[in-house]
Image (tube, rainbow, N blue to C red):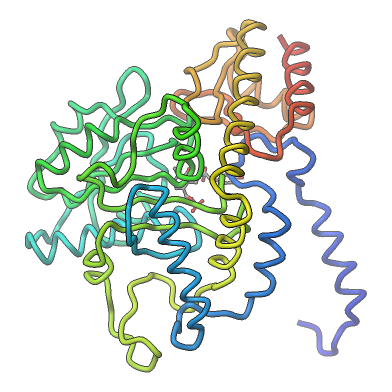
Length: 385
Ligand code: 0PR
């Protein structure tokens, strides 16, 4: 740090030069992001609540009420009255909380000390972090030929050390929904905690289903589901950081509670101590502002763009990995190797993401990718072909 204060103007100029090195969503060139530009109204509200701290909710009673309302409202979308949980920093923290709740619950009620979690091969890497931190072993269940968790493979790996089963509603790489209903049944029959990671799909599946899209049930209407991750900072258009963790019962928060003697509350269940109220307020605002109708329209638009890209690729002769279920399209050139194709696209100014399973170029059709950008992308892919 320099000794003397620096003039604001100079600082801002310096920062803005660095900011200019960032890619902007509005260029429509970021193809692999699950985040997008937050809605201006959500940003406005976010700024108003920047100083609030939900780590000490007795001091910020109003903002704590806002968080409770947001959780109830997301719970409502997921067929749960009186939901409990928190608005956290993102899907990673939400998943860590879910797995911590499962581990502590199994330790308390089943005496499991060296537990295992079963995750599909398609699970996000946040579960690896969770397992590492919580001293749990990861057991992977293979996928079926449609890249969804293989339910028989899952049954085979259940043991008396299993503390949680995880399934995904909107996989990171392909946007697919696991057979949650079947998994829920298995978890329920075996009395095992079941967590659904809908970090990506949670803010679109409920609306798309209401609009008549043929998508499977993934929520608390299934009796085996104990918790769901739903991220407002992905399809919810809330500013980063905003993840959501919703629990079916208070008990799951209680098994994680540690004493917080000098705070305005006696215990704390979240991982983070000092935490933003702004994320809750911005999420509250944008959910009210959009309503089901607004989110439905948005999700439908994303699906129409998905269909447009999917059809365009097929028409040109590209291999599309699977029929998209949500707004992700993954594809390959019939001859050009994936990394080479990615390089060619990068050279043309596209910010590309390569999926691992199966190896392919993946495009997440977020709000910043408009029809005009897709037309340009298809033009470039035609050139390459
Ligand atoms: N669960 C699922 C299903 C996810 O897809 C992700 C993130 C997470 C959990 C973790 O969420 P947080 O990153 O909020 O902790 N999926 C993307 C990924 O890591 C997120 C992403 C966002 C990637 C923007 C790139 C990007 O530019 O792959």
